[in-house]
Amino acid sequence: MASNVKPVLGYAIFYVKDVAKSVEFYAKAFGYNVRRLDESHRWGELESGQTTIAFTPKHQHETDELTGEVQVPKYDVHRPPMELCFIYSDVDSAFTRAVENGAMAVSEPEDKKDWGQRVGYVRDIDGMLVRMGSYVKSTKED
Image (tube, rainbow, N blue to C red; front, side):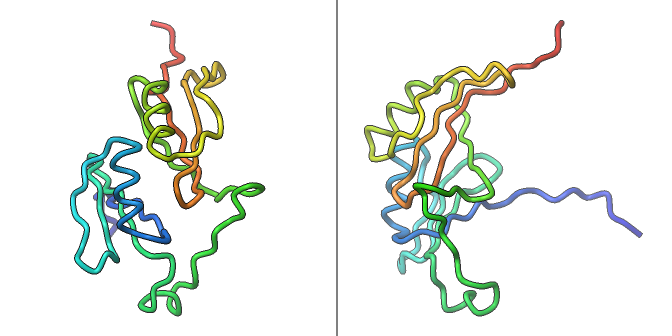
């Protein structure tokens, strides 16, 4: 018998070069509070509402053989097949804060009329693309 219980997205996990540096960068650049950074610096977490943003090293002897090694696209010509989007009420200020704290500007915030969102893009210190957007405006007419 199938269960009606829906899963909860618990973690978005980033595989990074340096866990401590990434935790510090995301806290400063994007405004998150650090939940924890273990003493070994092999796991870090940021508070982000229902879903935890977590960081762990790219190469792990515990899982590389089991699940394969992490492959990082060449960020100047490729992007990964998934995108992370942080939502802000003031995208322009958030974008400026991110860049002032070490994010690489990719695309300044602009209004996307096709889907009703203000969007800008940056790359983090590991080269991962991050969308910074507003809440999507409803396209329904009231």
